Length: 143
Image (cartoon, rainbow, N blue to C red; front, side):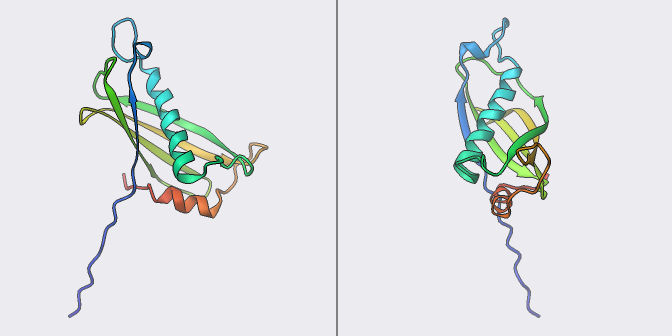
């Protein structure tokens, strides 16, 4: 009897770091919650530029954030370094989801998600280019 080994390849994970500054904090000295949404955007744009398409597909269409959320696990404070790990999931013909895991000193401090939809310049939803879907799927993980 011949047994075939199944190889499971882990997805690629994009990493981006940010040091919290005083401007990121609120009157209580902890990180203002809205900064995480800003950091989602920074990480997403850096990932897309570095790993998917440096031109951000501007000639072909636009990306629309359909949904964004953030779950807070632990407080953070100025001068902590935040490591953001980005993966994709539920990659479809016209859309995909991003998951952002924010870590500090190896501990999960927050998790965020965005649903991204691709549209033409008239803002009509359309298919992502096949070459782009393949690159996005390299970062896909099962949730």
